[in-house]
Amino acid sequence: MEYVNFGKAGVQVSRLALGLGFRGQPDEAEAQRVIEHAIDSGINLIDCANIYALMDDRAKNGLSEIVLGRAIKKRRDNVVITSKVAGPMTPGPNGEGLSRYHIMREVEKSLKRIDTDHIDIYLVHRFDELTPLEETIRALDDLVRAGKVCYVGCCNYAAWQVCKALWIADRLNAAPYMCVQNLYNLLNRQPEGEMFALVRDMGLGMMAFSPLAVGLFSGTYSPDRPAPAQSLWATRFQQEFPRMTQDDSAQVISTVKQLADELGKTPAQLALAWVLSHPEITVAITGGDTIEHLDDNIGAVGWTLEDSIREQLDSVSASFVGHPKGSV
Image 1 (tube, rainbow, N blue to C red):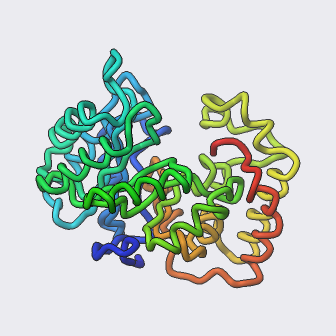
Image 2 (image 1 turned 60 degrees about the vertical axis):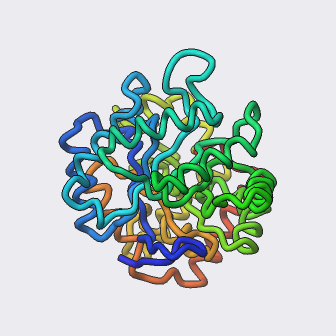
C-alpha cells in the first residue's frame, strides 16, 4: 500500500480508503470482516457517515458506525476514520442540516456508536443553504478545540462554496476545511474544472468517491447485456441502467475492459488507477462490499499507469468533463 500526506496536513493516509456504504452487503459480521481485512491489507483510512447502513437501509442509520466501532476496537491507533454530518437522522425540522444544534447533537451520537473519544476527520456531507456558513464553521472549530475532532472537511461542495468556507474560517481564526470529498470517475469528470484548480492552489486533500461509478467499471456489467440478476443495477438502479450504458458511456466502459485485458489488470483496477493518476486526488474510496471486491480494488495501487493508456482513457471520456453522466 502507498501512503501520502492528506493535503497539507501531517497525517498520512493510504491511497485507497474503504467506504462503509455497504450497498450490497447485508451481513454485519461479514461487513466487519471486510473492514478488518482492509486494515490488515494496509488501508488505514476508513470513510463512514452517520447515515450509512448496510444495504443502504435508511431505517437503520448509524449501523455502519457501529460496525466500524467493533472492527477497530483493538486497533484504534492504527486507523484514520471519518464520519459525516448533515443527512437526515431524526424526524422534525432539526433532524438534518449543519446548524450548531444538529452538529453538536450528532457528533456525540457518532462518537458513541463508534465507541471512540474522537473522530479523525469530520466531514460535512453537503452544503446547507439554510444555515449560515459562519455558524457551521464555528461549531466545527469548537469540536476541534474540544479534541472531539482532529480535522474537518466537506463533501459535495462546489468550488466557490469551499472557497467561501476557507475565507470564513480564516476570518474567524477557525479550523479550515483540510479536504474535500467529491464524486469523480471516468463518467463524471466535473471536478477537473474549478475544483481541481482550487485543490492545487489551496493544498487541500481530495477524496474521490464512486471511482468505479457504482460498479459500472467493476467488470460485472457490459453495455450489450442486461445487468446481472440481483445486482445493484438490476434492482435498485434498474431504471437508470440503460441510460448509463449507452452511447459515450458504453464506449468508455468497453474501452476500460479492453485496455485492462491488454494490461493484465481488471477493469476495476484500471479505472481506479486512472483516478489515482491525477495529482489532485489524494485518495480513492473503494466501496467493496466483500473481501473479494476489496482485494481486486487493492490491485489498483503499486503500479504506474502508462501515459499512453492514460491518454486513451482521457480521450474516450472527454465528453464527461463538462457534462457528467448522472450522479454515479
